[in-house]
Image 1 (cartoon, rainbow, N blue to C red):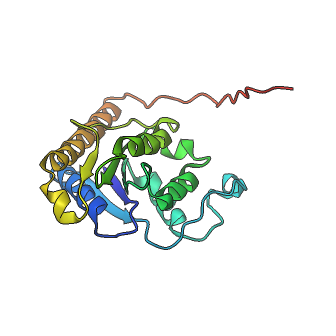
Image 2 (tube, one colour):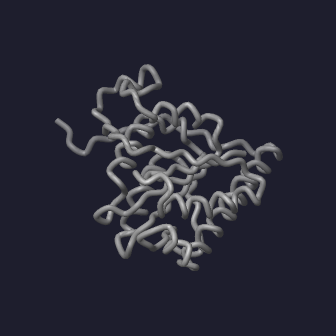
Length: 207
């Protein structure tokens, strides 16, 4: 079993990374394979809605979104981490996730996921709500912890002093490992994943 932890901060080894590492250590201790995937600090375009990826399976924009998507089929769970910018996720992560998830419900369906937010002071719960919406629309079980998945601090050293935040990250890792193992045990016992019905798209305005 494998989990990819996506670092949505432009700072590769900053506060978000520090929180993700704590989650990663708990996952490793539970025997889960992990990878931290940094989206980088180069501009990431948002989705332009061209629909070409629906035919090819890849985004025509050449950046690391396609690199990430190539890893998804062999991955069982995801943790998306982001700093809080104006009570929202980083613009780069938002653009990254828009393009990664667009038209790919079946690719992510029934894989477990969680969001974490790193903030100086406030805006974390709004950010978590934003990121969790990608999972809720993609048939993905959302993993929770003992508190909202957030850490506080202006620099990594501050985050390490946030004892409750660090404990929340460890609990999140343990909970995700437990859920992954439970799903795997169900498969071995012959319990198949739910079958999704064809999507019914209802428009609210009709001619």
